[in-house]
Image (cartoon, rainbow, N blue to C red; front, side):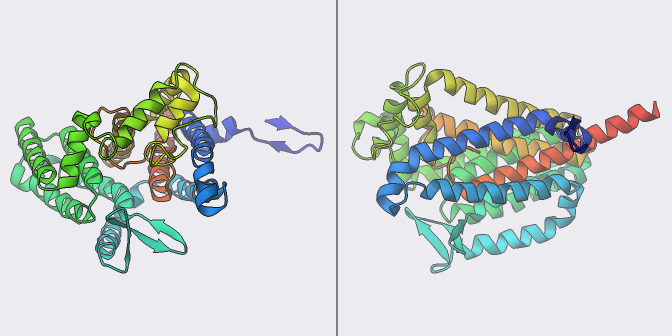
Length: 389
């Protein structure tokens, strides 16, 4: 306790986290990532926002609003017993069904760059596919808990799960949002594997999903151009390969310690989506390899704590829920870093906690709040057991 001259004692941050049994390491990693993201969003967007909106703080102000909303959401998710998510699942599934259908309707769904993925409300855009990530994780956790004895049966265990998950992913694919479908498909297969499905069933599912993915790529010209640009971006350096080449230049010129915060040249209208999907490239250019490694280490700590919480959760639903939340965030981190560094074809997917984007940030904060609540019950149970002993 910290004593002041008035005699009032105020608990420190560390004492509060111990008192309420929240995972201190996860909270610290979250705060560092949010602070880092806020700094980089201003650095990457100030020039662009000044020219387009006549306000260099435009994206920073919106991001700060999203962070405030995010802290409200994370507080609710942290203080709400995670078992309640299972009770709310039918309502959440109905709401997501309505939102995913509404976003496809011309005049209701807001179209950007050829994709109709947003609902506009009060001047802000809501991306239902981002919220669907949380709802799908809750569904999978609840399903695996209930169907654990049947999970090795394809017809009674795996097929109903694939049918429901596939229906919602089809709605997302119609937007079209191929990247989110890939992310959700991978999450479903990973959770089924951990849930105990037979390896041959999993191999069959992976084969079918891979075949469908390849078919979807080959039947759409813009997806094929992305694949060709991934294989040889210099074949078309002014069109399909332009963005990834500019990303290479940004990363390559950063060196060990970068050009300096705010000194990027690629953000000056060379690299598209510099403050959203490709913010990592500008971060590499301005801060350099040393700070890139620091950021990756922070992500590693966050992911480690998420999987630690999943391992130590007190019930099956908590284990699967923590696993799903951590998997969604970690897969999104990996995909973004691989895309920006040229190890995967270009796909619009924000970097959690770092990129600008309200729906993605809210989704990440909800997942973090759920993880914190599960960790609270882990420590609470551990303390109760200690008292009994």
